[in-house]
Image (cartoon, rainbow, N blue to C red; front, side, top):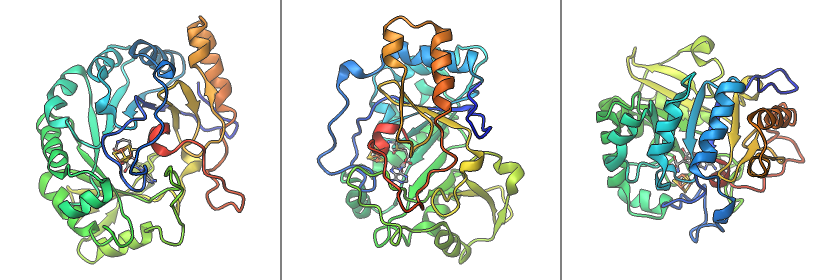
Length: 329
Ligand code: SAM
Ligand code: SF4
């Protein structure tokens, strides 16, 4: 099992399929992009499936989420999903995507075994979208969301990061739009994980501000800890339900104590936390012929480096060397 020194059990595996992306969201990447990981270091499709198999069959992982970078730009995505869905025990399989190109591939992903999807959408205003994502692709995202819902990738969740002075007034409008379409809205506090190191605690839009804005227009009834479990989102029934909204207050109300996540980067490094400063390599041992048992042992050992919390508020906090897009958000 993937137990850390504080007794937390990781059962939710996030797998980054690529560090590349077709958007340039300002809170994530600089306009010019980044130095992408060199191709030979990227795990092949077969290597990804093997590590997921080890996690599911030997280490107690029950949920697998593919992310990136933008996972839809990975050519082998449908095949990877199909092979992971064929594993026994079969994990729950989900995807976090910016939605570009999803309209074309949603049915194939569903047929391959994808269970659910989260699509990031920070604004409904075209000019703001261009300002935030530095590309004119709002219509593609909206079409992708509709296709995901039609394909049965439900509940469709929409992730938004609010940026002060750009889209921070849009929380009620985004929630209204999602409720009308049966999508579940999730607001995520901005974290210090951008490559440009532009995050500032004092300008970040907090969960408290998001609640205050939503409560102007909606009646929010907390679903409580039983529903939340180890999930990072605090969820609420909106106007008595069935619509729901979630707020992920990673910075102002950290949930590290009940964290059940572990990550694999696109180049095969175990990361025990988004904010970890250590990584443990599984790629080279795998390529050097390590058995499944050895890989599982290395992975278990890696968990012991997991810190009790992300430490954003510590005076000596240092942002990790990898940005969010290269870790897998
Ligand atoms: N490209 C896909 C997408 O945008 O959904 C998947 C990868 S992206 C890194 C995963 C999630 O992380 C997105 O919902 C995105 O909004 C969020 N994200 C990126 N940078 C962030 C930051 N600095 N703070 C909080 N969330 C961030
Ligand atoms: Fe790309 Fe997602 Fe980062 Fe936006 S948040 S630049 S879509 S990886």
